[in-house]
Image (cartoon, rainbow over all chains, first blue to last red; front, side, top):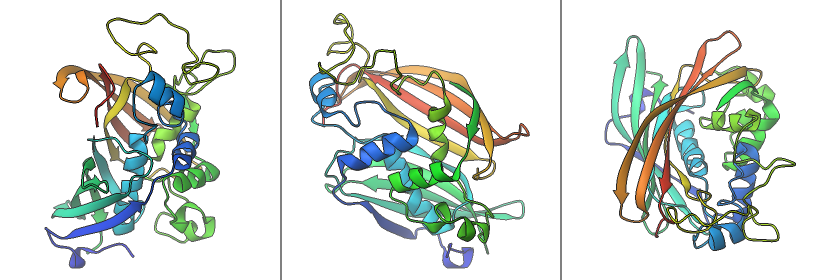
Length: 140
Length: 168
């Protein structure tokens, strides 16, 4: 069930494990679904020998898409007003990712109640890979 | 990028939700979704990115009869002269990364929508990076509209071109 205003207060945090031991196959799966076939994400030979990376790495949008799941699990699908952020480090196969959402504020926009969340996704070493925000309509 | 016709389809949403590891039945079960507040299978928050599938000129999709920069017989499928200014092989290939993405939702896209997308160039700026040399950022704004011309999602994307591979 989506969270309601009565259950939320600024400073609260919610966390979810997004993926454990990220597989190259999931990068292929995301490439196929999104249409972004940049070989940096799926072609180990290109990524290492041409581009000079230690291996293929995840699409930033895969990390953001996985992070979005924490948000829609909290507020419900179809309630987002905004969602955005920055990709601050690369995500590699084998990574474990955990996302945390913090309640910044609950405000009223005309007759609508809006929750503003800060988002942070980090890998198994605690290194931040995505930092962002979301706002969503919530029930009282 | 301009996309004349981006049909939002249930099967595509299901594949996309699977790819981001989201098991929410709202993306898979039309009856469940129909009984939800949304009333139809909704697109996950980042789904509009998949409009690339319907962009005829999208550069990151291989096409028959055109050269492709992924590995084949050679590590890069594209034969090109080394570019002293960019360093590394493949010229500009493999140096473009996604730095930021922002969405504003005017409503939630649902299966059955037929969207179109228009893109505008935004600002450009440069910065000296600690881990990847000189960074050139460029911003693009994409407006997704429905069949009635109503704005559904506004997307702002920031891409970065790095001088060299990003150090870990």
